[in-house]
Length: 492
Ligand code: ADQ
Image (cartoon, rainbow, N blue to C red; front, side):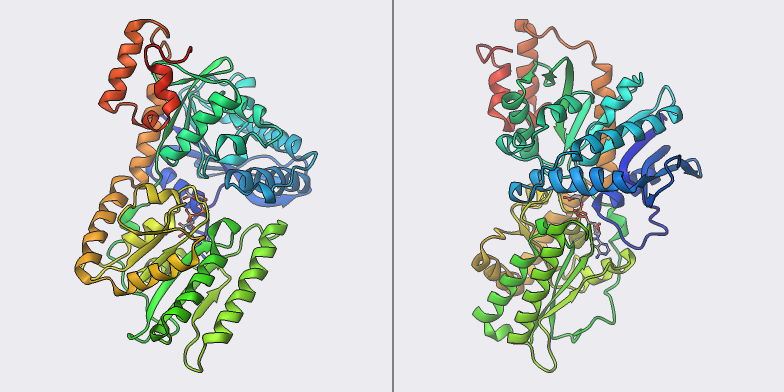
């Protein structure tokens, strides 16, 4: 089996770290399942300019960042430009001079450190928005291996993408990959639209995109979880306000402005006001792990949330009941499954999210005989698969408040039917199949390197047949893609 070299911004040893974000959780599973090397930042900031790579058990290879790299690359370009723009928050983007140069410089340095460790038959899998230029930098060093890229966050509409001053450089950097993977079909349609409209990419009949001087494949690979981690779990004991008569709503999110936490609190407050019979009967437990606290937008959201929790608790609370139980701390992962299982509702209401693994974890942790209900934002990538959840618009406080009531009053038979369908979806795209699907597609696109001749009638017929058979299902969502491969469609 070929070695898989996984590259991500942050490498975390989950045996030691109590908590992590979604990317690290998924990659730890990938590394467990494959002959692999995981390369990236160890989370440390150092003043030692000569610090090199530290390896552990031949499977983890990590490097520290300098203060200025951390500022410009991580807090700056990655989290103050790409993160907000890709989540449709242009208003929060800080296009500061110097961020982009540092971003590229760190990618160059990391690529230079990885290159001597590579073997000729390695497959390289680069993860997320921090590392878009990574393949370009490896290619400059002569690396010919297959290199795939996976974006864990959403791809924005093409006009939003074009607001990034360096968008053309980013597109050129994406073209250095053999395969670009995204979470959803909607993301694929956005990226193809951007490539076609923003940088004149053209879809060729085998479904790839001719971008600058390269051919790149773009497809969706919805990420999943390790279901066995969450099934057969026991209900958590010792939870505050744990009387059997009290129904718990659980929220577990990093404290991020994309996660819709103020909207969730407002909707819960509105629910208590509109349906007073539920006062003292329901508690919202929100676990919000601290994250990127030194980026300004994150300290703002924290203040907003604390003030909202205080005002809702002050208004509705009683001596023996506090409506919102808010914890601004990380929780050991092994405790989360039991907390999910003890909760009547899982409330996952981001304003925008690539996928959202918490939604899948909540479903997997339920008792199939007496399952809870998932209330899910239509703007989470997970909503594309988890269609049997109660899907709400998180901007609509009234609708979300009513969703809470519907979830609490849902009859057992309906809860079971919905849970069965949700569980099937969670199992279908678990973390192992996500990984397998991406890596086998990466192998395939590389072995296909001598594609059909682009313009022959035969190649067009083949492409259309593939579309009809659903072999290229992801392109169906883009009308432009269809147009491009139809005889008489736009010029290639
Ligand atoms: P995140 O934005 O981090 O991930 P999410 O997918 O929900 O979001 O993953 C969070 C993970 O961290 C979950 O596994 C959860 O259990 C864990 N977690 C969250 N809060 C925690 C806490 N307080 N204590 C312990 N564990 C906690 C990014 C994208 C998502 C995408 C993932 C994976 O933003 O859209 O789904 O990557 O691709």
